[in-house]
Image (cartoon, rainbow, N blue to C red):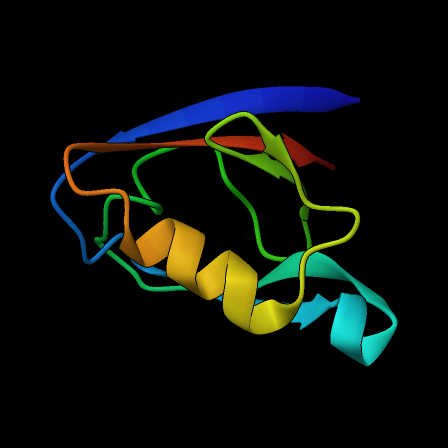
Length: 82
């Protein structure tokens, strides 16, 4: 089941990604920093990242996803799936 998370900026957001099209793996939350903005949301380690700021991540490489997240300065909107 997909759900949305909105993190208010600026970064750091407090999570790490793994995977991406270049790794033939879905983008996944690999780590959440305790006490961070991500930790205060309902995000969980292992959640799939379906979209970043409304852009579907199916064809995103790891670097493209990182750059999309870094370019979000005021807020970051993620669509995640448990």
